[in-house]
Figure 1: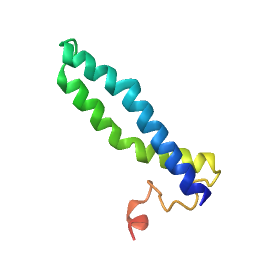
Figure 2: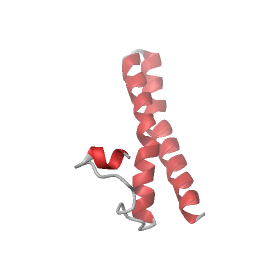
Figure 3: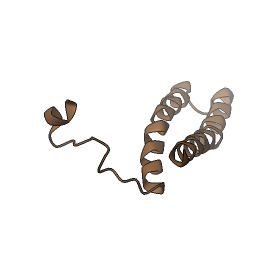
Figure 4: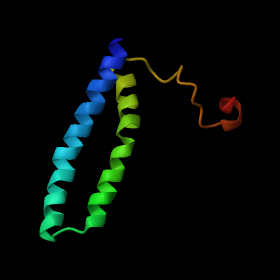
Length: 81
């Protein structure tokens, strides 16, 4: 339960911080014509990676480690099973 709560806290903190720290100011500048709309869309698409970053941070915070993550990038055929 501690890991789940930690994950949610990290995800929401990163998402809200990213939204109000980067996207909201960019959107305001795009409305004024100072920044292209594509920059805003690209920054919004970067938000899709926040849950994966939160998983890594949660594993580091809870000291769970990556040994039991069933991810070995060296030999993909063995880990795909």
